[in-house]
Length: 92
Image 1 (tube, rainbow, N blue to C red):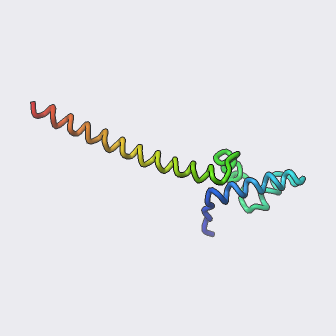
Image 2 (spheres, rainbow, N blue to C red):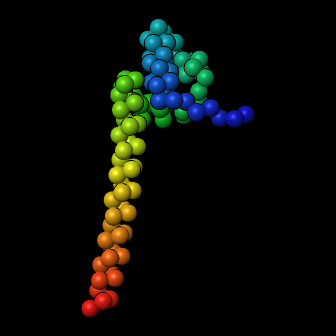
Image 3 (tube, helix red, strand yellow):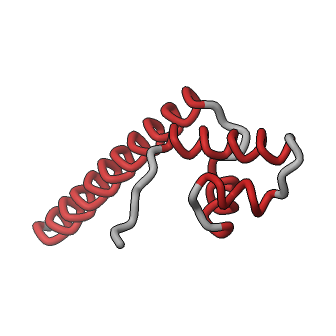
């Protein structure tokens, strides 16, 4: 069976749904089963997305992507600097 990739907004909605169901008297395990994920997945999601709202999740993902892009740019520039430094030291 192929694995389904949930979007961040869907994850937040499912976490909220578990909160509502457990508030209505269901056990947490039953509420987790009703959203169709395992307990391990639920607790992993909760540790990553717990307490966030939909717009905050979008912003978090944007910041992570920007951070990755900037890290790549810094590493490329550092590598170029080291290459130029090595080439310049060989000329003298």
